[in-house]
Amino acid sequence: MAQDLPTLLLKIDALQKRIIDAGPLSPEAKRKLDYRFRLDWNYHSNVMEGSSLTQQETRSIMLGNITVSGKPIKDVLEMQGHNEVVTKLLGMATGELNLSEARIKEVHKAIVREDDPTKQNQVGKWKTEENFLTNYKGERIDFTPPAEVAEAMHQLLDRTKADIEKIERKAKDAPHPALVAFAFHRDYVTIHPFHDGNGRTARIFSNLLLMRFGYPPVIIRVDEKETYNRYLAEVQVYGAPVDLFDNFIAERLIRAQELVIDAIEGRDLEDADDLAKRAELLFMEAESKRLTAAEKEQQTEGMVKRWMEMNHADLNQRIKKTFDVFGKFFTNTDYRYRVHVDKSRAGMPKMDLFPLEKLMDLREQGGRSQIGMSITFSGFKLGTGIKEMKVVMALRFMPEEVELYWYAKRIGHFCLQRQGHGCSHARDEEGCRRCFFKSEDPFGERIVSPKQLLAV
Image 1 (cartoon, rainbow, N blue to C red):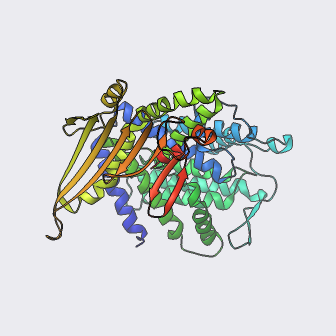
Image 2 (image 1 turned 135 degrees about the horizontal axis):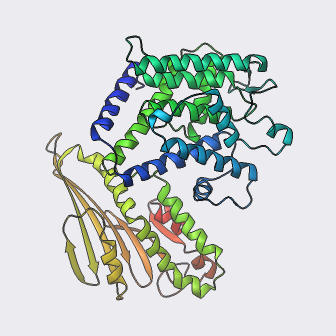
Image 3 (image 1 turned 45 degrees about the vertical axis):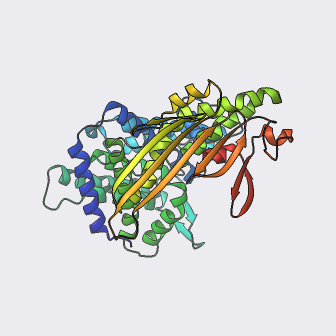
């Protein structure tokens, strides 16, 4: 059920108190949190406005690589400029996050690139031609005429600065700080002061205001673009109450605050699909190398090992976070991990992470090895019909294959060698080169790639 704006603001205040009471983040936690915000902000805000770059290409540009094969140089340069602006803002103290006409134009120059010299000459300047867009109903929305932009922006900045002054001196009629940022966002987009880049600059400066008041930046994701644009149109054109848009942004601010609390409490900050993306990169890297079939077979197990070494902590945290939901219904939750080597069983006490390094050391000695995790929930709170619930996951490494089990049931394998075991594709060189994964499930036989296995 959707919550009204006053309820959302109370939740924002409660979360902000938790963040303030926790004190400063450790340098490492702050580094990870800033990276998460920077990646999401760069990627989503630019792709919403038509950038063709993928999230991984965004990562690459953030690391200093400005050559992305097959992509427009405009997209690359705009992402590079946006990253520089966001990095600077995240590194500023709250007192440095000031709003001014000069700063707005400076940021516009940094994040907008044009192939057309005439259009490039308009960057960093108020628009000189009328602009409009077609909304979700197929109707045209006209923005503030060019001749009125300078005065409209002057009034917007004056209103915003007056509200900031009231908040900072704690005046009785001071608005809620978050509402100042939300109002700036709405009014700025309604003016549309530049020929292009208005959405990105609106999000940058509304976030600047939030960060000035101590809040984290709001990220509007690509899959939320239609809702974002529809709510803006409803408020701008069709007379809907501003709460429609403000509620939407407030919910995303709460999401950002919850991410900060995750960082404070040492939880995983990655998106659910990050592990899959890293797996895909790893296999793309292998495919890009010109290796013989034999060399590819030899390196496959090493690729799996490298992926697990990169990601086992994140994988473990994701599993625990998923099943912790069930813990609410039980009085006890017990996590146990085991390493099995051949017929011996080296039981291990409760640990924070899969003991992957031990498993890999044993695996290199030859034979079969397995790493397992069991989660036992006991003491059902809602009745006596359930004594306990047990979840088991195991990852088994063998000379010929890697197997993944859930609930002690084998759900599939992918081959590590082209011959030598029962894989139905063992004699198909093309199939084994791509390391097919065969899933046995009630819906029949499916075949997918190992990167999909690793994304399970």
